[in-house]
Image (cartoon, rainbow, N blue to C red; front, side, top):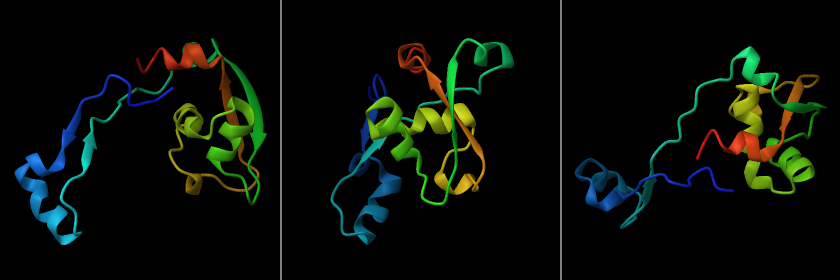
Amino acid sequence: MSRYLNKRIFQANAIQSTKDLLETRGLTNARIIETALSTPLSVEERKQFSVRTVIWQRRTRLFKIAFELYGDSRLWWIIAWFNQKPTDADYSVGDRVLVPFPLEQIYERFV
C-alpha cells in the first residue's frame, strides 16, 4: 500500500523555480509528489478503530513498529498520522503510541 497512490507526480526539471536547486545539488531531475493531505480524526472516528498500544522506548522507531505489527516498514506513516506525531523525534521514552487496525479501513481515507 503506497500513500502516493493516485497522487500527481511532477518532474522537477520542468518547473523553473526548481532548476537552480537541482543544479546546485548536481542533479538533472527529481520527482515531486503531490502531498497527501488528511485531516486528523475526530473522537468518534477514532472509536471505529481497534488499537494496539506500544510504549516508546529508547530504540523504538515508527518503521520498526510498522514492520512488527503491519509486516511492512513503509507503513510507518499510518502510525505517525494516527498519533498526530509525524517523526520519531516527536516521541519521548514512555509515550504511548497507538497503532490502529484494520489497515484496510485506515487506507480508505487516503485513496
